[in-house]
Image 1 (cartoon, rainbow, N blue to C red):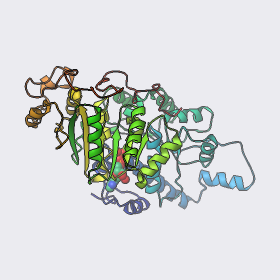
Image 2 (image 1 turned 120 degrees about the horizontal axis):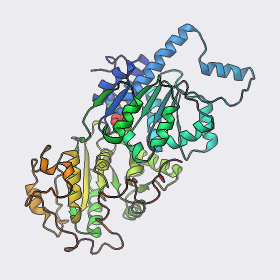
Image 3 (image 1 turned 90 degrees about the vertical axis):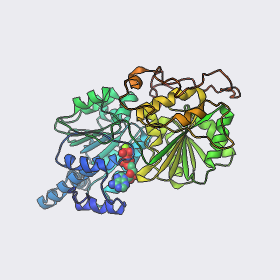
Image 4 (image 1 turned 180 degrees about the horizontal axis):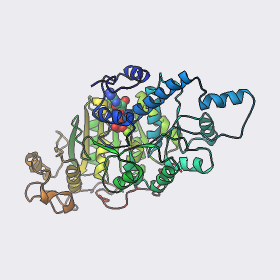
Length: 483
Ligand code: ADP
Ligand code: MG
């Protein structure tokens, strides 16, 4: 299958060849023709599978084809009319931007990435401007972007609502609506904003929704806002990430964990790495500590100003930062091909976040390594991740860094695929914590020895998978959004 065979406009084919894309990915192969035919789409497929192009290429195709027709009609495009009016000296009141396409994303980083990808895909497509409207961006800058009447708007929901309510954006001519990472937007509490935005768009629009899962709340919303959608599920929610090698290292305490992290980061195979922490404070502390230890490290989390976040991501992209220490929400969507390793300094609160975390490596078909540093008491959380991904994560031991506890030794020998099988009723996701098979994978109890003994003020192994889903452990529920 080639991009030509998908029927894409020649200007897009040319841009894709510049970008070095030789053939469509699985999700693109299915989504592009369906979207060109005008159908609504509900898509779930793993991170890094090329979803941005899956919705952006058919949209650009549609706009490029319409522009060709407009040329032969010799009429003026709305923007040419605006320009002509300005040249005549008519300065009407501020005219609301009337985008043809709106892409909603959960985070600013993701919005910027979608805009950058769009610029790349539309390099040869005339009359297409894509802009991102984000919280944290100075208001005059946003007004200036909107006054250019961009065809494509990429935005986080909160900030967009503000502009809609003040009449700066008019969706009456919207043709295509995309919800990227819809599950995450709902997790972040954007549901009311999304519904308000959807209600402001014409019923005739084409809607494409992308999500890690199409079950539950997301599925309900998806059905409400789409018409006869084509459902594309490439890998299901339990994504395999077969190009990513996963490992667990058991640690006795924080100092053991820190020494092991330093050791692993010095491995020659580490090009760039992301270290995930549970809290913003730990992200800062560990980044500082790694800097002192001689790594070019930087923190990334939701308490940082947008400018600082952008600078950090740029430095990461340019290779000036080698180790990014990040929280889940801040790191979502980071797409830097040189990231060879992901370290879970803390396990994520939710198994699906594990999948998103490890998806920061192994981008664009490369191989990656994902290593979790796990306290003995957290074994149960590893199991939950394994159940979610339907894969076992092998336990590994590094010479000189052996954990004092021996519980993990017989375990690793017993850990062959087949210890848990998909469909095994006893270990199905609904059975909660009481599902380990006696003798096969025994985890030692907390408090029975070294756990946390020299750990200082930090408490480990707390939290687990309970509690509200706030994405980051401190701050209000929407502190990381863009209001
Ligand atoms: P997703 O949204 O599914 O996580 P992205 O759209 O961010 O994935 O794409 C992941 C990476 O793959 C990006 O670096 C992108 O440039 C690259 N990519 C996308 N499609 C192709 C393709 N057809 N060929 C090669 N690389 C691709
Ligand atoms: Mg994406």
